[in-house]
Image (cartoon, rainbow, N blue to C red):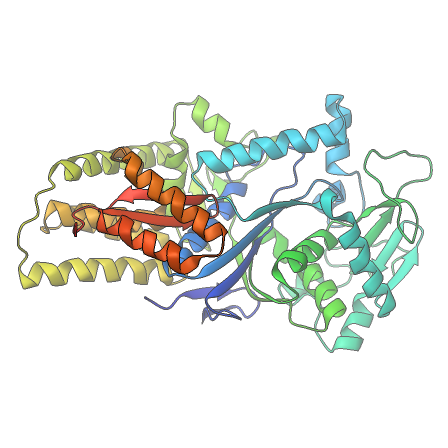
Length: 480
């Protein structure tokens, strides 16, 4: 298998990916704040996470993948440069719609997961909600307090960035452009803060306001700051140090630097080895925004007659670190290309007669496979990998080998091409698959592996993912 290279925002370099404990890989993605619909811009980040997850699984890594859902603590002041001011986004939307904050967060969480599925994104091992982990966040703040990294002012408990730099010899804000995060340059000054860059770990509920989402804590009734949730939840499920952290490029200025600072202050260990940030999606050359009337969701695309996977195709046409411009014309082109690809799969499936291969064509097939994997492994170069797909279709290799290659490529590209030509799985195979699952649950892995081999002898392949085992017919499999 090809070595994987990723551009690490932490070092500003493209680096060879080396897991902490190979073949185990631990990966965390900052998910949405569930007060509104996730936009097609938001989903570009989750799509990129999905591509890397698929690549890692393809390369036989054992991946623990977690994504958060922010349902408390993300304040409106974040848009103005100070995430510790303003209203809670979820509670504000609840007032607007005449619902509870809990109803709002559940409603938009459910829709997000539905859109996630429509884009054929593989669900992480866990979607973790901030409100389900209040005690973990309180415990982390207590640890920081005991180690001398916090102080109290009228509206909450804050993290002291100068003390952090002094005690740890680390540089605060190493992910961001430091000229944008230095004192007074971007962050709105709160006169009570010791340092304008300091940030809230725990916010007190206003004395004259009864919040819907608030909890008792050692410091008083309140709610967690926005940044503390990701540190608390990622370390709970992935450990104090883990491999990969994903997010949109907007998070590298304050949210992710704050995660690093509070996590490493608490543990004394490096928090994350590889930070991956996806560039914004532009709409007709402009930044997306509701005020501009160009805020689009997956539902908007469907209502206009597009397949959500056409958006997935569009995402693939550019590297995740490069700007991608969404236009309806571009989406139409992606839909047409996807339709053509599906037509080709049906055609190739019908041309299933295998003929003897010349040495030249055998070498060409191997080269196409290698070129695709090298492309996608080179910092997730999806545009180059997509180009290989069309090279294969235009080539003179046999149809059955084109078919095999495209289904292999699709394990990473995620168009679910196999489902278009999927054969009915015989009951006998289904029984064997269920038997294997029961053996795996009972930790009888050697016996389960024997059943897998029996399944393969009958011409089928079992693929394991977070949602369970999936079985498919292997084209031209040898039946023994």
